[in-house]
Figure 1 (cartoon, one colour):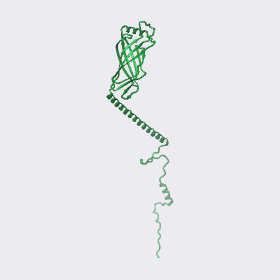
Figure 2: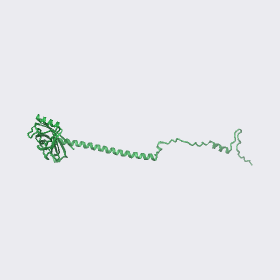
Figure 3: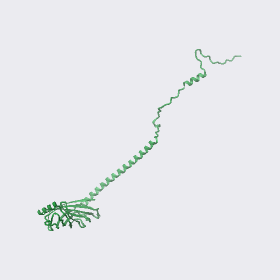
Figure 4: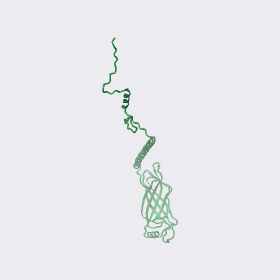
Length: 267
């Protein structure tokens, strides 16, 4: 019977160290990478995977800024709309004024003093301390040369007569309606009571009477309403200033020179 041969581990080569299993485990343990020390690390992440979450205080600040920006935009829009509306309104008013002028061709009324009769101005027996009570009867001529515009003279007018800066007398115009293409001469009585002139004014007035050239100033203020077709405007104040020179201070006074200027207060 043949003998069985059992294999045996080949003996170690001479000079080669023998390693036990415990030594192999120790070597495997020593070759493992050591753990990283504690500290700060830089981790690189792709941008498309970065999600930023602001802290609560920054989130509130951002919300306030966004709402303030929205309010600012709405205010700017409102301002732009308002400016646009004003510009459009101005253009429409300019067009309407141009059409009104082309259709009606408005003209300013013409005013002039036709006659002046004076009472109570006897300077020959007047002392420097005496008071006077003059009375002026004045005829004022108003010429409305407009074809399609009438003028309503309302109550509340005033007419004053001055010598230099001293007011001698005052009165008012009658209320009446002046149609288009009409000339109206209205009479008004101006009265003064207890007027005291300064010594210089009295001396200058007596010298003017002696020269038969007495300069006077009439100031007229009249509230009127303009009628265009069937439409009446709001109340407008007509201002007329007339420089008139007479030869004497009596009922037979004659006008030597006259010049009137005209103005309007729209409001």
